[in-house]
Image (cartoon, rainbow, N blue to C red; front, side, top):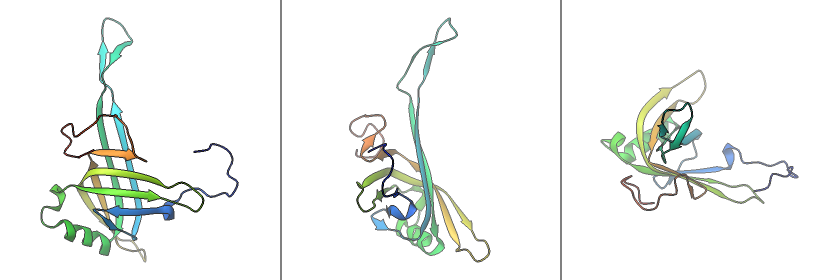
Length: 154
């Protein structure tokens, strides 16, 4: 990806994203957010500075908002116990003349659902999710191969 000035002025925006949750494309997704971190453990001795670090503890989470209709459809598709079931989310970013970027949120589980309604805006359901693994355009943050007890086939 280039860091040169944009000639055509086009960058990816929310309308550039195709959002697939559990293999179903959702058009009425008004926002999606996701993040991950790898927090290293620290070895301290008889000094003020850290002497070394461990690989650390990986965590990932996110949230997305769907229209009431699409949100209820997702809940229905997952069925009873929907907060205990895992599913993938695939995000494809594409614009004419630009490379497609695919981010994969693996082993997602719903941890909270919030309903919101205001004035004439569409009624939305906001889903907060725990994510087992996040691949940014196919790149894994830890580089660990295989399953490694995550419940997600990498």
